[in-house]
Image (cartoon, rainbow, N blue to C red; front, side, top):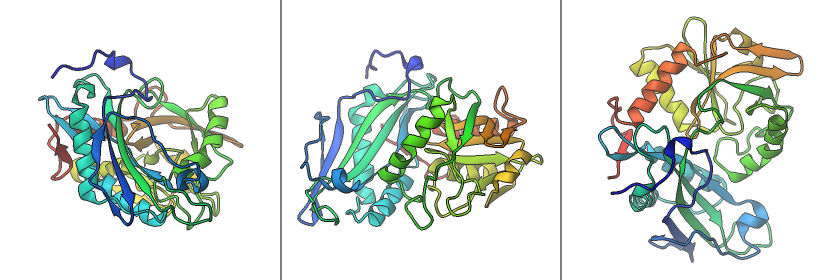
Length: 341
């Protein structure tokens, strides 16, 4: 199979239209079988549930070319489970794990020429999304839905790749207690857009959000979870019922404890404690792991000792291990890698 003629190493994290996508429709109480199509456009009622009441959720995962030439995905079953939870919370029909995985497999196979070559640092990003496309004027679930999976080749999420980034402590809240912070709802990301714009205008890569209830504890950024490392090498990740359960974070926690033999703590992390950590990083599907060098807040700046110019040693080892697993250089725990072709 001949690859597309792209400058793979220069790709940004942006949308590039590929050849095929998967589309399925829910109507009269059931899903159709879905199909691969070349049509990248969505047609729906002006009164669609997604337009009127933001009834939509999505996922993000990647396909990789391994060192031996296989094309694989990383733990897509967890993405399927997370989308099921999101659909339940937003009163949308669930997409079965079987349909979800079928859609991922078919989209990757159909767009195999778009999967970046091994060693380029680029990946094929996959975006499954579910939304209400049927008309609804009263506040209620839509009568019809569309499930769609498209693919786009991407480079690093943050400009400059894995260079250390600077964060701003946001004055805005990302998610309310007992709200939708723990699901991947589109409305969560809409709420973060203005705060993200403010941060970018001031020269920051991202925001750090605190919990909305007390504004004292670290939660996450607009699109990634946090990992911290203590001076004695313990890996710490914030715990809250308003944080999105990142698949990358969960995988890194497992790697830290069961592969690298590190002590791991999932717990509440007071903002006041951040200055005591030796390493800090963001983690997620898009970013994988990005080191944090500093966090600015109204009262000053927290400079992270490891991360001023490059990744700290623990963060670096975590990144090398997870990328090695994804690209087939390191043996994966059972069930983590789904071979597609």
